[in-house]
Image 1 (cartoon, protein in one colour):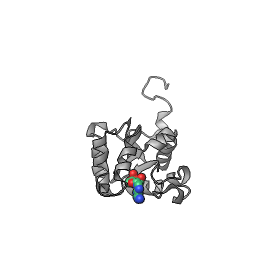
Image 2: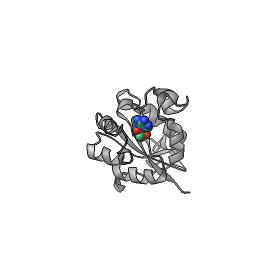
Image 3: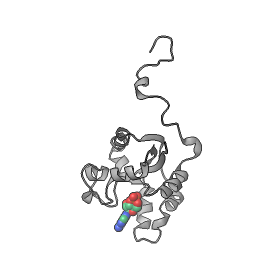
Image 4: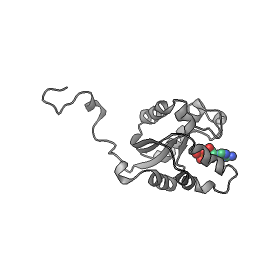
Amino acid sequence: MPLEKTLIIIKPDAVARGLTGKIVSRFEEKGLAVVAMRKTMVPRRTAEEHYAEHRDKPFYSSLVDFITSAPVVLIALEGRDAVAVVRKMIGKTLGRAAEPGTIRGDYGMSQNFNLVHASDSLLSAARETALFFNDDDYVPSNLRDASNWTYDLSSGSPN
Ligand code: CMP
C-alpha cells in the first residue's frame, strides 16, 4: 500500500496556547500515523530555507520572525494521500474564514497566527520532511495492532 509522509509544524501560537495535544489527537484519530515528532526552536536559517518559496513576498521576514520566536512541534505524519488529507484537515490560511471542523476553523481567528503549517504538495512534503528530520528519526508506523497494546503479551502471564 503506497503511503505518503507529510510535514506538520505546530506553530508558536498553538504551542503557547496549549493546543499541541488536541491537534496531535485530531491527526491520530483520523488514522494518520505520527512517525517522527520533536519539540524545538527552529534555527533562523532553517526557517528561511523552509519558507524559501515566499522569499519575495511582503510577509516573508515577519513569517520567519514568527516561526523562530518560540518553540514549535515538528511532526511527520504518514498515511495514504496524507498530504491532501492533512491540508483538508487544517483549513484555509485565514482562521476566521476557515470552515468549522478544520483545525484553523475551530481554534483560530488570525492569518499570521494560524496554528499549523502542512506541506502543500508531495514535492514540498519530501523537501520539508528532509529539512527537519533525518532517516533515523523515523519509527515504523504499524508495528502491532492497537488491541495488542493493552497488556504485555510477551511476558509469561499477561501484565
Ligand atoms: P503557512 O501554511 O505556514 O505557509 C505560508 C504562510 O504565510 C502561511 O501559513 C501564513 O501564515 C503566512 N502568510 C502571511 N501573510 C499571508 C498572505 N497574505 N497570504 C498567504 N499567507 C500568508
